[in-house]
Every structure is written in C-alpha cells, then in structure tokens.
Amino acid sequence: MTEPTTERQLAETLAETFDQFESPETRQARWENAALAAGREVDRNALRAYLAVADAELVKAASDWANAMSASAAKIRRLNARVRELERPAVEAQRAEIRQSFTELIAQAEQDRDFEGAFEAGYQLRDREEQWAREDASPLDLKILGDGTGL
Image (cartoon, rainbow, N blue to C red; front, side):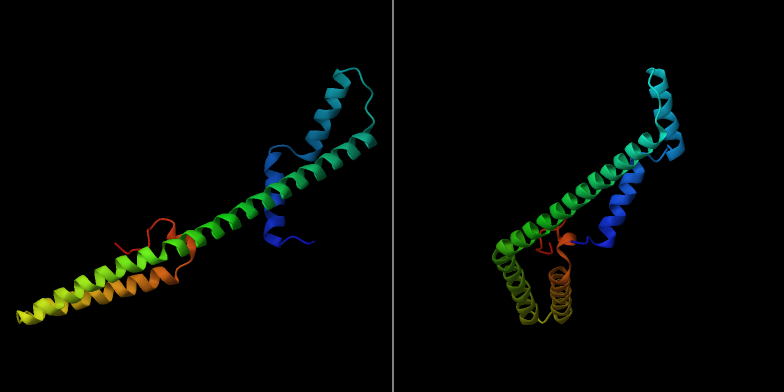
C-alpha cells in the first residue's frame, strides 16, 4: 500500500525534526567516541549499518505516528458529521422559530403601515437565511466553533 505524498512528507519531516541539530557525520563521531570511551573497538561498517537501521526505524515510527494522526482526524470528522446530523432537527426547529418571529414582525409592521420597519425586518431575515445557507455549505471543520443556529 502506498501512502499519500503528504503523509510521507510529514513522516520524513518529523523524522528530520528528531535529530535536526545533528548531522550524520556528527552523530557517527559521537557514537564512535562513546564506544572508545567505553573501551570498545569501533567497527565503522557495523556502526554505519546500525545507524542506517536506526534511521529507518525512526522514519517508520514517524510514518506510523502520521498515519495514526490521520486516522484520528478522519474519526473526528466522522464524529462531527454524526453530531451535526443528530443536531439537525433541533437546529431546523430553532431556525423555523426565528423565521416565524421575523414573519410576524414583518406582518405587524405592515399592519401598522411601518413599511420601512417591514423592509428592515425582511432584510434581516434574508441576511439570516444567507448566513444559514453559508453555514450549511461550509466544511465541518469550520462548524466546530459555532452551534449552527446562526445566532
């Protein structure tokens, strides 16, 4: 299975971040000095092979972490969609109540011959409807901050 380029890039960047302040030559010299300080003979070929395996393990660990974060993000998106689906009847009921309130306000203003007030209330209702349409069309990630009622 091939992983998407962005996940692979994330894993590589993450792996580079773990030892970003140490060049491969510096790291190898550090390991050689540690072996010499411990009184061991340094086999440079074995050390290079060990460091290559360590680098591969680091990239694998970073890749696993990136995959786990991607799976968590997908799960959060699914759960947010489910919450949005479950809250939809309550949101629609509240929107209907707001529409009814505006409609009654417009009718009362027209009855009182306050055409400017009726126009203003109608304008506010149109604004609210447009806001709700934008909220319904927006991605779920943007809806996390709002409750979807448009209040």
